[in-house]
Image (cartoon, rainbow, N blue to C red; front, side, top):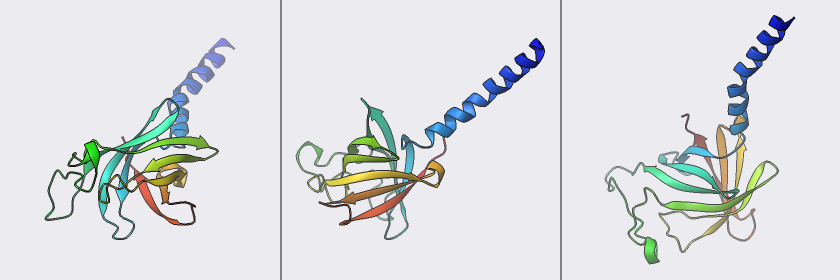
Length: 153
């Protein structure tokens, strides 16, 4: 009887990493490939991380268009971010969990500059493999959505 319990317990412990991994997929925390919703071109990798219960995201890699600088700067940004390298730039912050959506955050597009802040919400889809990032001004109806794709670690 003890052998059966030991085998069962060992089997359940062996499944624990898979269960934890499945739970992580429902959260936007991780690295995401951003895709331009108009051209379909991969633009960057964004790492979303948690600080004090809120999500933020920074650019960890940039894939510029051919003919553009390999290490672009935020030349449309103002203040201390003007001419700051886009790689390493925090572009989103303040997202809190609200059911299966992360809401209440702000996001900006370095190509437009930090003077254009959008309200945003994050919605994991496709079993956590995709992330709908909806940026808007005023009401969510007045905005656009990009779908980002999770990068497997």
